[in-house]
Length: 385
Image (cartoon, rainbow, N blue to C red; front, side):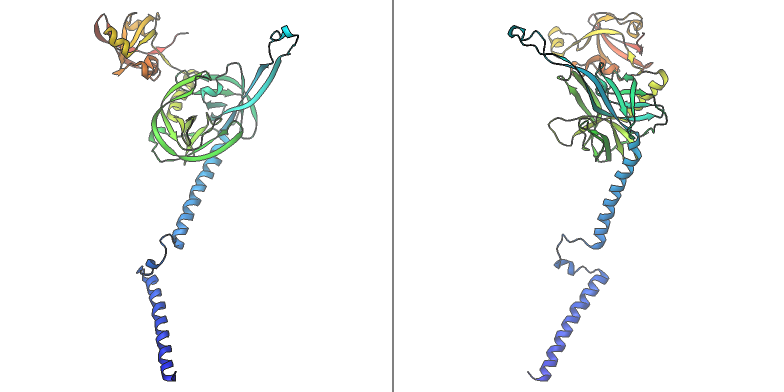
């Protein structure tokens, strides 16, 4: 090749390289985006990667901060009980065999709770402390054990307050469950599987205002719960009674149940229910519940149609001196509705509605008496001892 041609070709190559490099520089400098067409759409720029990393770090920081803030207030509820074992001595006496029996003491963690008063008041689920024959104890975060002196069980909700002799405990901060939103971040802390204390799990609010049946007929405990919080934060047996916490470290619910046969579906009682019960408890020293004062039997929809009477609660007996007695309710009356809410057997009957009212509240009751409807006003009071 002639020197002149070689120099020309070499100059063309250098010019082409310069144009490519210069174009790439201008593309990045002025964000034309032309070269992005030749890169994979899945590539993440350094700035985008930094944003993702910062987001992950922030989420981790929130979980760590919530766990550190709330964990000192979370306790484990343990149970101690004597249990008989062995077979009746006369079962095989015909064959000349004997099987000595006896008692053994079992001790295990059965649930979770959290401190709401520095003087030793603990919130948990009623079903956690349902065995009246057992002795219960509270184990704090610093592994101190305190025997439970008194148990106050809520007759209307799956709640119980435990009183222990302790000073200087760290109470949790209670939030506002009325302001919860679906998708909101939450943290659950509890004794998972009755074995792993202070287990921390995370998730979101999956649903609000759910109605569930908690417990099992085989365990002797079944309760209809309304207006509960659904969450996908992992809640396992042993988490019952533990706190469901928002990103500010405030308790917004009391973990109560997990859906059997499902994954990532748990439920919690709204903390505002607990706050109302706490206010009553601090005033009276017990759970204050309204008492209408009637013994009744529910009339189902089928029975109502067959007998041409309204569906509702058929009054069998009226307790003397009760709210119902003072309002003039009589045996044979059918209570059809309370404050416009119809009384139906499938929705828990009369007790379900009364339990949601407050002591001293005035309610309007629609009665069916001798073929006619009439409305009366009743002031609900506590049950007299």
